[in-house]
Image (cartoon, rainbow, N blue to C red; front, side, top):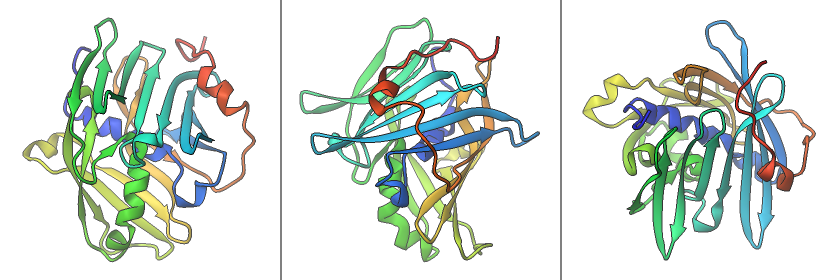
Amino acid sequence: MTNRPIFAVFAGLALICLVPCVARAATDYYEGEAFSPDDGRLLYHERHWAQRQAGSMRRITLFACPDGRPFARRILREGAGAAAPDFDFEDARDGYREGLRSEGGKRVAYTQAPGARERSAVVQVPQGGVADAGFDARMRELWPQLAAGRAANVAFLIPSRLAFYDFHVEPERPQPNPTQLRVRLRMDAWYAFVAPDIRLVYDTADRRLAEFSGLSTIRDDRGRYRKVRISFPDRPASAPMSADAAATAPLGRRCGR
């Protein structure tokens, strides 16, 4: 798996929904659950910590097997900007890594496929450009426009391609539920037909992301991207460990026995 196919761009966007939205910004910890849209089976857990350090926010996400054992991690640092933060993602099951880092005043995207060397490139972040879960900050900026029924274009960093790609963010018309804002993401390119849409559901009262539907960046045991429905319940949860512990917790190489 030396280079991810173009539809995997959407799989990378699954991570968009993993950073707290407006109502969760003051919350230290929350959880999400990813289910199979076919049979409702629980596929994995998401555990999220927000930790303020030296005036900046660090966000840690652990991805855990149904039995609770973590196997992947993402660490995001907002010092470089809320919409395009530095981040590192690692899946210990096969060693895949990707992210965006700051080096000598430049931004460097990188990716490392299983068994391969790291590939990297200096990237220019477009105006309003988004990296990973920085989409949350961009959504706050776009909320009035989307809530008014107007679409927007957003440039997303796709680390596996070492480049930004244009996406179209469009609210559903009409909105089926006045207490929710439903939006759809699709690639703004001729090859968009090969990539399935991503759908997001927000609660309008607090602008909290409630549900994500689409391809996940967390793959199955055969390395295939699978469709998921990720639910973010609006209920308190107790953190199983501290943010510092989550940032260094050992990751397992497989789920199940």
